[in-house]
Length: 394
Image (cartoon, rainbow, N blue to C red; front, side, top):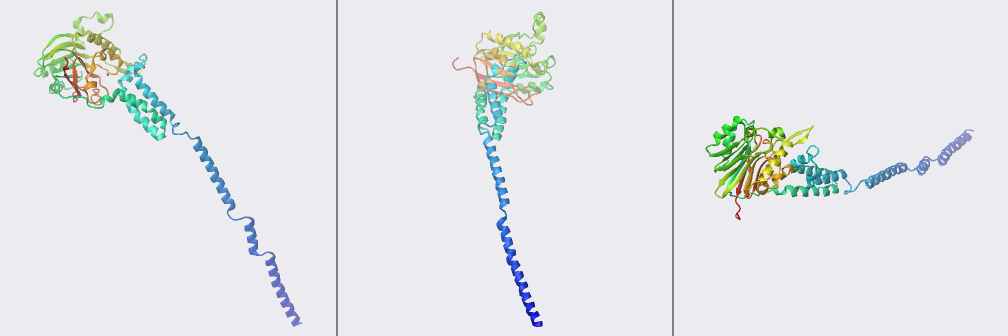
């Protein structure tokens, strides 16, 4: 029995071993894992999802690139603005003055429109707009055509006569210092505008030694190292309408703003005009108000047109630039010494930060040799000076 039991136990043990082997053979652990791995390979789903996302992103980028405008189509607003700026400068004379004298205002500030070019250029480069850069060629060309000649120094050494014009300012706190500065300029002929009864005596006293000849007609005066003759006030229609015409001459002389005289030079007589045209105002209600200035300019232009002397110099505060159409009656008969022989724009007002040349020296029959701006005085205007000569042909 014992042996039988051992045999049975042995057989049972073998059978148990066979059973385990059979179970393992029926479902081996490694085989089961391999089968699972074969049925669902690791990472395939993730790779598929990642590839799909990459494909979608690529499609989106392609769509964006395809829909993005090319260099010639970018920045249409900048390109349009550049073209409008160029046309504004090119056709400034066509801008009507009917509404707030807009045309004269644009012409007064015309040189400063050039500052918009670098602003538009910066925008064009930021947008990478080839069309905007190309459009900027128009305003650049127009501006250089209008003002490029003022960028260089056109002065020549030597002159026969030095003339100076200065609006000394009614509120000038230092007329004595102003008079001495002007005398030190070495001018042969010195024109002053905006003289007041209070300061008039001071200028006469301080300038008497350097300038033995002088005349004052209302609020303008001329001091000269050379003799004067045929001196008279010039009617620039300060008074408009019947009431103004009825005023006595003595009353009008008190606020007269223009004169004409003859300076005797060793090359012959020189007709000299001194003028201070009416002020201009910029207000919300009236816009660029220039009524009195324009009326004065027309009257002065008529006086110059009637002048018999072939050699003429106009000195004064015209309250307008050479581009302003309101001064056409003057600028069509005389030319600017700054344009012909200056260095730069020659801005004269306001003295602390000049933005416009409204103080002018204009000539006819003589040759401008040089033109410059003198240092500031106590006035809100800067003095302007010029050297002129007689043409060799005359």
